[in-house]
Image 1 (cartoon, one colour):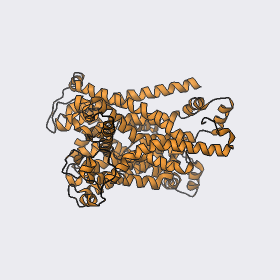
Image 2 (tube, each protein chain N blue to C red):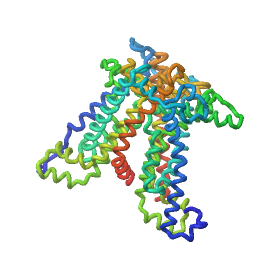
Image 3 (cartoon, rainbow over the protein chains, first blue to last red):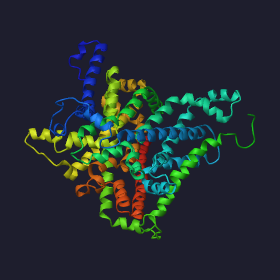
Image 4 (cartoon, each protein chain N blue to C red):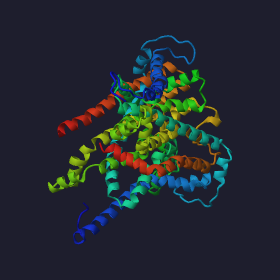
Length: 286
Length: 295
């Protein structure tokens, strides 16, 4: 409760509204703090290097699209190509991870079979021992498979995730059994039953896909180790090679490049936010 | 569909992609990596078995312990800041005007949607570059400019702050969802027994959020142990002044791919495993206790 000095005279509804407005105002401060650098980045898109390094200068003197042209025209880095690489890697990896995790999670969640527990414990271990620890043997492995410097060297290690298996095991366990039995009554095989179950867990599939996409989009060390031709790099690698502080590179171009890294993840979040929220509610209600 | 003796039918083939991937991209690399850590340092050529030599060398390696200390400090720091902050923000978010909630959630989440290397760059530019807002602000008071990234304390702090910036949004959404699922009647009962805001938070919200809190902490802990990008973008794989930004993953990366000492690097990576398990064990022990007390 807020200190109720003048509030006592207000009706309960009014008082609740006043309280909500107060809380909203309080919350806008940390939100502004979190988002401020992004706003700064947005306005820096048309600044000169000199303006960018002028303290406390927030707005540029003139607005222009030069930085966009420089970036898309590939003046310093083949950005469009690298962006496409990143999109390809993150999409294929997240779709793959959802497919592998959902199928296995369905079996773990709905059936009893020998070694079920043992296999689940093994899955837990993949969560506990992060992929980044295995970067060196994975590198040697990809070297032997002749996959180094291809997107698959980055995609494949990310497809198996213990977290996904555990998540989908839990998700499928909560699907009401009678819905699946209805499919069985119609003569569906156990493989077909899975397809009946899929639409029931759609929000979970999309949510896990979203989270995996975000993490794959952000991935740094695995692509750093696996890729090295400039046209095959992912966006975070390409940008961080320019972050070094070479003043000949227009910083406005780096701002554009950095800004558009938020685009795919933000759009995905925007379109999937309802599913994301409902899965979160589902997940945390136990 | 009739009752069969023995095993009920189950879609075995659905396990195949998982098992195959598990074997190929987790178990085999794990075993090979461990084997590598017992071999002498060569890249692709024939190497000799040296047993635990690399692990013993680590015990004498001051930089390894610096990296260990930084990583531990960083893990502890991020959790210690993010958990209370996101609990507070989640409570506020639930009390905010309904229409603004989505916008607030998005703003908090924005850094979490951004690649950490970009966050590191932005952090450097806005807050702490030589001409950044931090220095510009201090100059108004005739202080500075400071070379923030020459200062070991600030380097450590900046890594923690970047993680706070990145993960607080997600943690807040998870905790808010958890709070939404707590039955209102529990709060009303507590209120009728005269419990204030703080007491309701400690005795109703916290215990019922236990699972979500454990999940958030475990996630942050695992992320902290593999942190790499922030330090890499700001300082390269060298570790910066006083090795303040030297982390376990960046040190292992440096040892393997700059120095070409694969065996030592593998040993370094593998020494992470018992540490991660130990920290997670402590985490579960701490929160497991609480449950015991409640019952």
